[in-house]
Length: 111
Image (cartoon, rainbow, N blue to C red; front, side):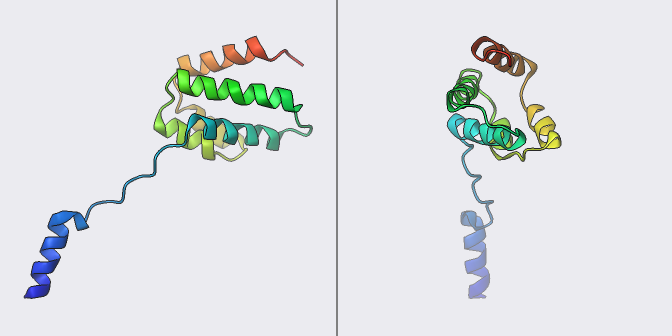
């Protein structure tokens, strides 16, 4: 009978609660993950100066436009595949995607 009382106390005191989800990645971690994927898909790596600009553009957009926790998790952990890129960009609003595109066009000259 005692073990039943202990079990009820444990469950009643939160023993059955789900573990807390890890905090979402920071905008810096998102930028690192996205840049890593970009490098993985390119035959030639962009010069370090361009890579630094890309990282800053992503970090700034993420922070300024308040990318959601699900978007940050997805983008920071996505694989360098078209399927993952499509899935993760769906987590961003059209306004967020447009702003990111504008920032890129304004700061990185076309090849």
